[in-house]
Image 1: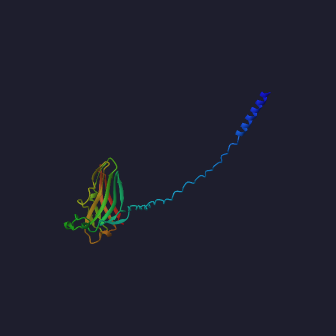
Image 2 (image 1 turned 30 degrees about the vertical axis):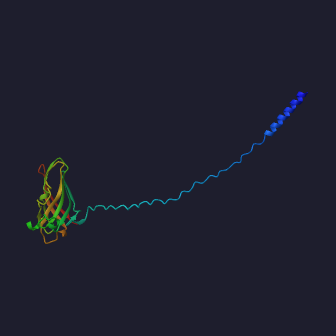
Length: 212
């Protein structure tokens, strides 16, 4: 009987101890941390970009018409072309000078008194395998008033002679003369020369060029 009472007392004591220990665990208060906004960086001035310079306008070269240059009056529109069995002959322009000594002192008029000049730019091209002989550098030039002028062989480029397969020559043929008229007022010129192929077939050139 005593054991039963003692056991009951022990059980009561144990239960009361457990009750004292079981207290509600303290609830931790949630702490909210406010998100800090990123610090605004001081505004920086945009770097000034160098202004692009306007592109230079390209002036198309004027392949025609008339131009005054270096003491010459140049007629770049005075052009002509012919094909004689593969020998292509071109005139690419005409230049005139009223005073040759001003253009170049080597043209001394004291030698022959001829101080006016006309220069005709020729191009000769053999596009065949044949052989041709032609002499633009020995051409004759006729003015509007009928004056006939022989080419100045010494003052002209070596444009002519034999031209053998696929060869090409070009240069100015010079005509020197003296006239009371201003050579820059000439309106047209007429040119005569000839060419032969390897079989002696002949070609007579008779070309009139307006100067404008």
